[in-house]
Image (cartoon, rainbow, N blue to C red; front, side):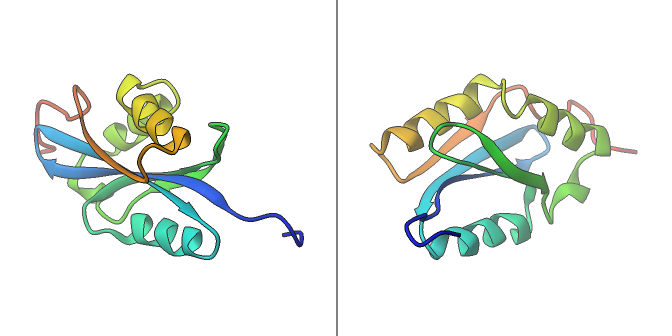
Length: 118
């Protein structure tokens, strides 16, 4: 990192609420707290997938979270594929990037599988 470059990240975690409901939790974090928030999203026990975006909407990093074993593996892969295109996720990112709120939580409609893994 250069002398004047500071982290200003939008960190998302897709959280398992119940078998028919996932939630998108987003947080805008700057500076040294950004890495701590990212690590928290990774390790949250119900986090299915986490992702880090910059303020221009560019995807920086992401992966399966600690709770990804709560759903079938293909659900986690689908979440990763749809990350940049899902309208609910884009709404959360837009709100965070605008600076109007630094924390946002929204349900993620249609993301949860209809059946539990067997």
